[in-house]
Structures are given as C-alpha cells and as structure tokens.
Length: 276
Ligand code: NAD
Image (cartoon, rainbow, N blue to C red; front, top):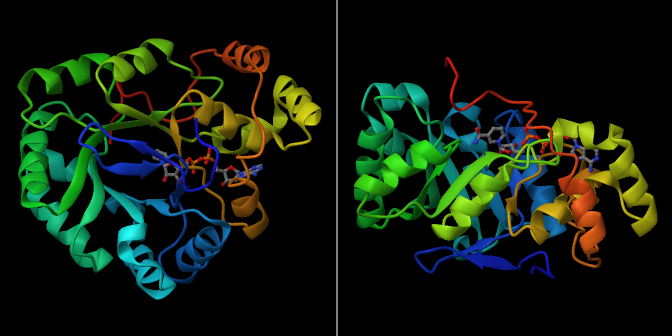
C-alpha cells in the first residue's frame, strides 16, 4: 500500500515505478506542458507519462532538464505509435523519441495499441531496446487478455506494465487478476473518467464522508487496488489535489461501493475495435 507521494511499486524486472504519475495527453508542446510538469514536480510527482503521438516529447524533455531534479529520480514513460508498428519501424521510432526528449534513456517504453499484424514484431524490437539498456523497462498499453497471451507465448522479456483505461465505470476485474498473476503491473489511464468522476453521486457521497474530492477518492481507489495511476490536469490546484492521496484510506465497504459502479463503460476506444 502506498502512503507517500513517492512510494513505488517494484516491476517484474526489479525496477521501481511510482504509484502516482502525471499524464500529459493534450498538453501542448512548449509552455503548457513545461509549466504543468514544473507544477507537478513541485507537488511531488516524479513520474511523467507521454507518448510520441502526444506531440509534446520536446517540452517534456526540456521540463525535466530544467527542473534541476537528478534524472535518476524521475520516471519517464513514452510510447511507440500505431503507424510505426504498421511500418515495422519501432526501433527508429524509439530513436526519434529519445532525440525529441533529449534523453539517453527512458524508464518505460510501451507499445501504445495492440495493432494486429504489428505488435509481435514491435515486441521483438522493444526487447532489443531493453537489452541495449536504453529503456529500463518495457511494456504494453491497451492490451486485453488475448493480446497479452500472444505476447507471453513468444516473449523473451516479459512485459513489465500494461497501461489501460481503468476507472469505476470500467473495472475489468478479470484483466486485473490476469495481470497480477502474470506479474504485469496494471496502470490506469483516464482514471478520472476525463473529469466525469465529479458528476457521479455515489462518488460524491464517499468524498463528503472523507472530506476529500471525488478525484482524490477515485485515485485512492486505484492505489488500493494496486493500480498505478496517471491523472492529467493543466490547472495547478488540481495537479496538487490529485497528488494528495496519502493521508487517508478507503474502507473495504467504500472500495466495494466504487467497484459496484462498474458498467464496462469506456470513454476511450475499444482495444478490440479501433481504427487509427
Ligand atoms: P483523466 O481521467 O486523467 O482526466 C483528465 C481531466 O479530468 C482533466 O483534463 C480535467 O478536465 C479533469 N480533472 C483533472 N483533475 C481533476 C480534479 N481534481 N477534479 C475534477 N476534474 C479534474 O484523463 P486523461 O488525460 O485521458 O488520462 C490521463 C493520462 O493517461 C493522459 O494524460 C495520458 O498520459 C494517459 N492516457 C493514455 C492512453 C493510452 O492509450 N495509453 C489514453 C488516454 C490517456
């Protein structure tokens, strides 16, 4: 259980990854992403989640360098995009990401989506990157159980992380159980249902009981499920609020109430049916 903003999970290759990270999807390159990361570092976050498709890797890299925080204290994730999988150019895409980030290495490199006909080949490329030491861990994103089984059958390096849409409307208990059994750390994207957590009555009721915000309740629920979480905000007060999760514990009853909100409802694309 995490009790401090810098607490970490230990991935299946022994490296440490913070339970809380800062997502930077839709933060524009340059000033916006740099300011937000600066505020996130001030609030205690040490993990940043970007992707080549977000178009902000240059700003992310600059914000990290300008922070003055030793690089080894920061956990940096980026991802290889679908068009690069289709073109079988994951190795080149990785070099391009490193160049934009101005970094020698990333902490975690993910396959962004399970592109049919592309992800097995991409995994072999990620294994080479891992063996070269330029990604401290490699993993997947948006992989459902059949996709994970495909990788597990052929891999020589096991995926360390699977980053998926995960929130109280989309709990996916079977995926959570599968990943736990396979020692693949589950990581939640859109943990705040892109802001909709503030509109859900059951969450608001629990929030009032603990004197916390709906966002804090849902992020704490992630942590108590041992799911890494990466909320995004461009507003400094929310960036701080989303990191203040470590001075309360949800009761088993309140965890169950949140679990029961599950409707299998996505706000993002379906990993079995996406066309991009
Ligand atoms: P999120 O659930 O984190 O929601 C972010 C939005 O919620 C904000 O834009 C804001 O409108 C609102 N919000 C933030 N803090 C709040 C607060 N305290 N109270 C009320 N509202 C608040 O959604 P997201 O940005 O889609 O996901 C988070 C991160 O996950 C992304 O930035 C990205 O890094 C990652 N992600 C990955 C994938 C993937 O395919 N791997 C897909 C989407 C997102």
